[in-house]
Length: 241
Image (cartoon, rainbow, N blue to C red; front, side, top):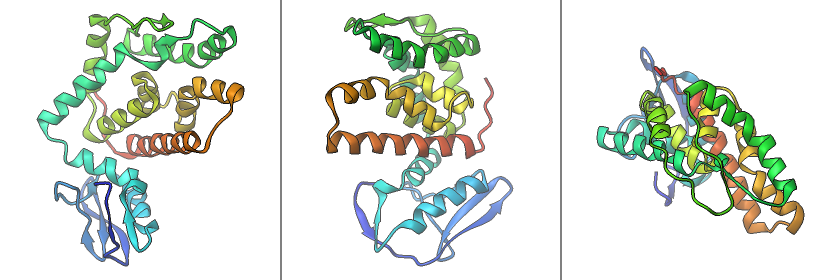
């Protein structure tokens, strides 16, 4: 969906089983469509209901920015092979800049907070996937590690379209592929991922205060993480790694 708004053109929003393994969202009895003009048919009733709820909450004008689950589901259904391959490459490249591996040199209080929130996820990822990015401190960029990318690319490539699109949203919102994978695997819930991604921000707020613009941005990120988690956990994709 685009950032524009249009007049609400429907009254009733319903969910109906269309075929085995496919649930469609209907607007006045007609299928809702993706940006690519495909019927908005998803693999689970739970996800269809979440999409229907976003359509139903709209007022006289549809605010697509307030429909993140609709947007992610549409992106998954419109995902063609070339775009999928580029997306897989982009996600594997997150290993070079993953938030969890970029630590402060000081103050000591912040380094302790980062370690407490991030070290358990790194340890889990290393045990689950056989590799984890290298931790660096300060402003020095992490050197790309080919072996780490090689370890994670098959993990990402094995995901179905809904979980793949959800992982991209999670990684972009948190700055971390590993936090995204932790949500997909049930290691963290959406709130836990957001809290882990917020360590640096919360420290700065506690010491320097917050402002309305930054607060609104943080809430938008939190909502994006929540929507992506819904798509990831109810999208019905089978993971093969």
